[in-house]
Length: 138
Image 1: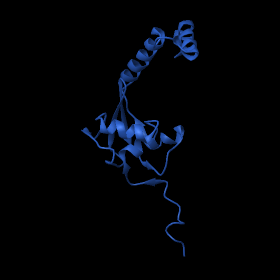
Image 2: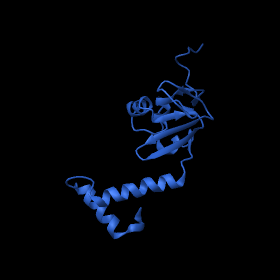
Image 3: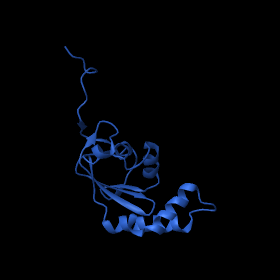
Image 4: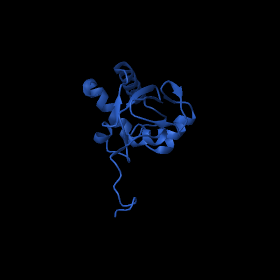
């Protein structure tokens, strides 16, 4: 007889914590960042501010503000663990308007061209030079 501990977990669970789901589908780099965004009111679930422990289920809509962009994610499923970038797309559909993505891209380009700080790093300089050489590269 197989014990419950030895059984393999299903590929997708029914629900999960919001902060954990955001981390698992790679909306945030760490779970702590996802939880902090929830606590600061930057994440909404079905149009209402959500706490990190809020339960997400397939079909729900999550909006997460990241800098100047508000990403709109539809929950397609709940993975059992953190997924790779390609696999994460199976659990969340990004419905962020293209205009918002373009505005965020443009702001990033302007930041790079402006120098971004008191003294650019080698990486910043190379990025700025690449933008000046080929404006269509991004």
